[in-house]
Structure formats: structure tokens, C-alpha cells
Length: 137
Image (cartoon, rainbow, N blue to C red; front, side, top):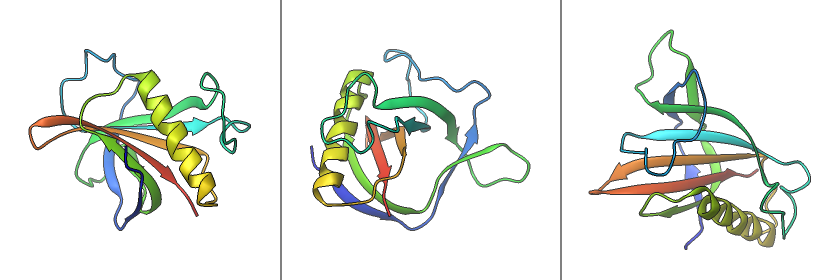
């Protein structure tokens, strides 16, 4: 897995879901989705975080939308990220492993990492993709 430094120049907007929860692995069938997690305070700066503790609560989820007035918004904000992707839908264990690798790389690069983790599912070039974004300052 390659971990890249990404400078997202414009936010990506989503319509916020009323009930935020992750889809089951076999349920995700397409469309672009974004999930935002709060990372555990103790684990988010550890080089060897506890796999069971690192991912905190799901703050919101949403589906892709155009910027429209009046809709509840969720967004992947513009900014700097450590970014990785796999060209398939990952299960939660694989997502946690990827998040830990990103965190280790960020700590190795001496980045000041955010307490958020963004998970994005999309369909691109004929296949499903899982992407993780970890903001840094």
C-alpha cells in the first residue's frame, strides 16, 4: 500500500445521512459514500495503537451530492492529508490496519495528525475503491 501526501484543493460535499452507520461489507453496492470517525485520544498519537481502541465514534456519514442550499451537509474539507487507497471494498479489520499504517507513516514524517479519519467508498474505472484520509497540519 502506498501512502501519499495529498493537498485537497476544494472540499467534497455530501448529503448527511440521518442515521450514520457503516454498511455491512456485502451491502455496499455503489454510489460514493463518506464516513468521518473521531480517533481515540490516547491511541491517535501512538506508534503502536490498540487496534480495538483506535477508531472512535462515527461522527457522520453521507452520500455524494452537489453543493445545494438547505440540505444537511457533510464534507471532506480542503486541506492536507495522508492518503491511501485499495481498489476493492475493505472490511473493518482491513480499514483499521490501513489507518494504523497511515498513522505510523504520519508519525514517522513528524506530522501533527488530526483526531479525524475519513473513509470514502466509491466506484471508479469499473471497480470499487476504499480510500482513507488522515488530516494533518
